[in-house]
Image 1 (cartoon, one colour):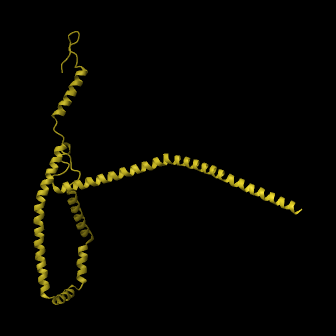
Image 2 (cartoon, helix red, strand yellow):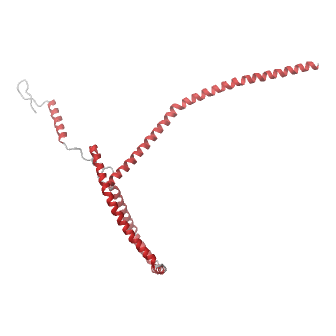
Image 3 (cartoon, rainbow, N blue to C red):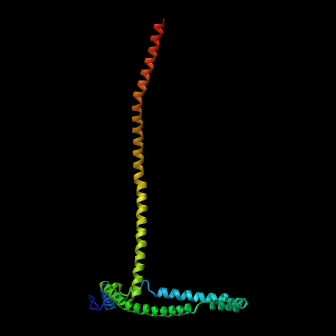
Length: 241
């Protein structure tokens, strides 16, 4: 930083404004020289399932060791008549025709062959599908560089990510719809009920008025009838005299 000269020719300390500008310049230079933003960490991967399976396997093995289940089963098998059971099974198997054993052997061979064929076809289908998934992920990262590394470049991770995001969007949509229903209910309770009550009061008053108007002619007719009867009785009494 340059020092400014005073009025008498002496050097003054650095100006505060110059120091502030120097710090801002240093900060900008550091930001420009800093490397690009690091890749994002994946939200969910297939390692979650593999790790869960390993955890359950370890827990199962630990439970067997702690409970001594194998020793208990071994001791229980000693008290069981296994030899007699094997003899009975051998006698029953003698009654089975040889063709059944041949069919069973052929079925086992076919099962092995079909398993190998399915594995081969699955490998042939998986390779192009995985390549397409990797291309889709790369295109996604090209459009949104800030999301680079969000999805690992494998078919399983892509499928898992899509399923996870679909579940997230479903839950968010349910929450939004529930909130809108609640707001609608609150709005109806606060605004619509007073109006309905007023309309109900007006309707009841109008009903009472109309009922009164309808009852007036009936009352008048009843009074006319009563007066006519009284006049008829009076005339009848005079005629009898």
